Image (cartoon, rainbow, N blue to C red; front, side, top):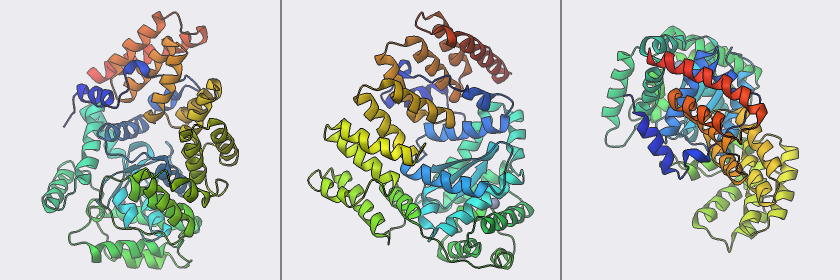
Length: 458
Ligand SMILES: [Zn+2]
């Protein structure tokens, strides 16, 4: 169950990133949020980290930006002490789950199965209900019983075993998963399911969604499935669930099918490793976007410029991203910067813009601006290791070895190896390039990692 650390390092090295290439800024000290006084969040982040290491996540910003916007919009009506963090697991299994610290995972297969945004909102609101009603406390109790990394492995293992669906072995997998979940006593009780549904209906109504769509979705799953979908298994069905949801959701509103939802579903079709339910958007822009992604997949440079012309960069950050990337590819970073700078002003902090904009700024010799951009994103989402790579490159080019070592340390801490993390900080402290203002922070960090290492060994 517990994967040895060598696995993580090997997986990491396989991405072509050497540990020395990594650096994380000390901006706002994200560790305060990660590692101090918030065990629940620490576990949630660890689960997400393990799924990332196993290659189970879909981290394309085209998908995560949308899911996080939708999730945060709903979560505003059911706050939780640790806040919320939403991520996408690339699995055809129809499932969603909440783990510690408000970390909520939604499978790509589930998103593909929804017919409109209200249905997806219904599933997310249900998971929010579990978090809001503190149904996840058990996983923290488990952490104390098993030790941190074991508990995180256990929870990630459940997510993966639920995700491990295949046509031939589906029944066996489902049976195995069910037994596993029961053995670990991690299923929710029926009472919890009802509470989560009740919270969900309130959240959906406040956010202006049609809560009856949640019932429609659950019904559809039961009718369509040749076997019971996992979502219904790990979330047992209260009797007359659909009726209860309907009667609670008195006011009907029209189901929503906005452009953002259509674009995200299109991106899921394009980037998932799995064969998911077919999808053709009905919005003309989204259909054009789908065709552009197909042309990109074929690397059809002859048609791309003309096709892109039909997707105005002012219309959507995804379109601005495409225009910026295309200009970079054409060797025109000045044009790329013009497009992306405009988009950044309009949609500040949008995840879709960060990588292409940072690359463009670097190409135009504006390393300090690129650094600020990457620092900002890492501070907002400290677990997002995909940004460390580019940032590490940037520091390497500037020969800022001390800061690079600190970033490596923070990466090791994120994957739970506090021993290596503390060692890297030690090397950073000995490095003459480490700026004076980073030294005190590095010493604090070293103490913290050493403390966490001791806790881990107990
Ligand atoms: Zn549930």
